[in-house]
Image (cartoon, rainbow, N blue to C red; front, side, top):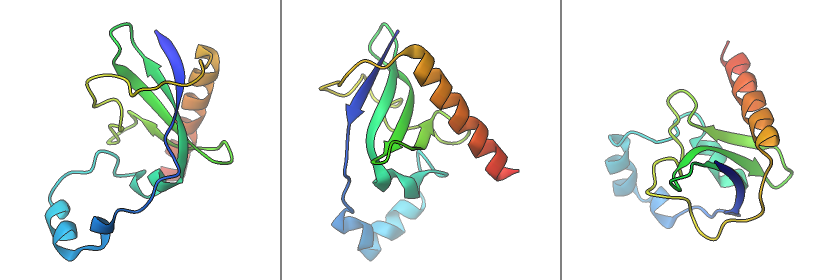
Length: 116
């Protein structure tokens, strides 16, 4: 098991996001991250937990200021990288397992308390 960073942002809005046909068609397709979809544009980098087979098992998305804004899998939110055949490339610097677990747990706790 390894924990690594992955730089992903800044994200740009797709021109298709505003096209009416695109919006109608995607209305029926389930979203992979329904609770965090609006926050994905804020993500600058991810921390990924990668198993020995190279599959991402958990992810945390961080804003430019270093605040976690997404995580998965959490509830109905399956994530971006947990659904891929393997980890994205190139991976960045290692992250300690303790730090990953701490941030993931804090995010899950804060998300649960906001829903209560």
